Length: 450
Image (cartoon, rainbow, N blue to C red; front, side, top):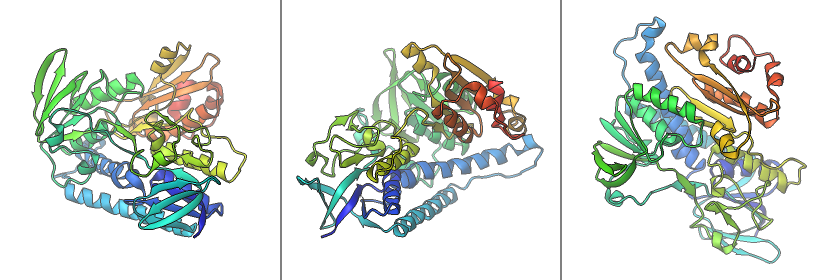
């Protein structure tokens, strides 16, 4: 029986990235995936959702084409065709991952993998599809799953999770979303654009916890103007079918909706693949790792959502790269979390990287803020008629850029520039001295620091 250099459980962004990098480095690699290559992100999360959101954005643009002196009549959105296009995009990208695995000689095994043993010499045995596989190193990339909170009546309710919402071919007249986080807000954006009456229930007093509070409030106000109803600071006390009973300050009332979408977050998958066999140290409901993504067992690594730290695809990819670099012995830095971008792909987009004001205030750290309306960018004004936005950059006492937060399109692209500045420890004058092309929305970063 072959003893592989590396075995990887989970074929999502962390898993397939680790497999590609390990294979490219000449390591014999086996990758186990029980569902479909690409994991939740590619098949049921990031890519499908963004594909739908782009269709909604095009629809929004067409509906308001008159703002740009363009006449468009009888604009409509065909949900079944939108879903079909989403499926086509997913199939294309999954095929691309398969091709990469083949190109780098990665053995891909379909089925549920289970860790069976850890020998004294470090060899790990994994069973899958009736066969056994040995490996010198293991990378755990099992991802995360939807949190189902213990709400009375939920177990018998016909609720949606993101999986069902991404597959529906019938547009509901009304939708109640439980949870005002990133996933909840992106679905609120999509269904609102297509004409569904949307209401969002969030237990905390503001949506998008962990992102810049000022900009989150502005995004909420923007969607309230678009017709979305928000119930912040409300707790879902019970569910009866698609009716949600919500409570605040001792007062309870019912919200009616044709559909109920549960978006209460995600948690690491640590069950169902024999993790207990290894007895690795745990943290935050996931697997504890060091900066090189090693667990408490040196030849066992964990990357992606299973660590419970940063449940983002780009974090998972970077962690996988850090793990493989360490395995092959490259003298490279470990994983850095100083400037992980967080993005909400609504319309307008919201993005942030580095420290928030709320975080710094809680830590008692001094800082200063440079803030400027996005309308100071000529390109933004030209392309976002009646649109508003904010560019906020946070500096430490010595002028180092430590945080950046943007509301307005295309914040998802601009945050890359700010993230690099934060990661590299640039000072405000250093970024401001760079030449930005004109006219671009990215110039707003330079303007904010001028």
